[in-house]
Length: 100
Ligand SMILES: [Zn+2]
Image 1 (cartoon, helix red, strand yellow):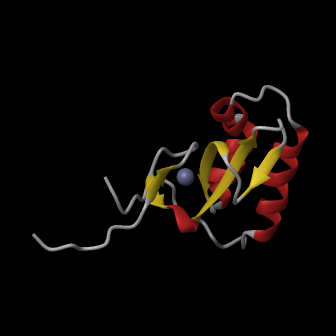
Image 2 (cartoon, rainbow, N blue to C red):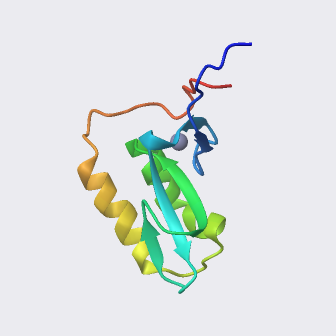
């Protein structure tokens, strides 16, 4: 029984892949009703930092669904901002899961 440290993985709301959470974008529905990014306690949703997953999450309102926020312009703004930061050539395919 070796104690190999395992990365903490989370499921992407877009491609449903399990990935190391440090490589994902985390959005949190704060108790105050606001939106948290990266940290904060509350119901959270994860999405891969790839254009494909970010665009899919934005287009299909997957974050909103996962966090059960029906209307929240901050989510759209956050995804749009993150898309700007992701390099165009970063086409890390969502289906290409390292796990499962
Ligand atoms: Zn994904």
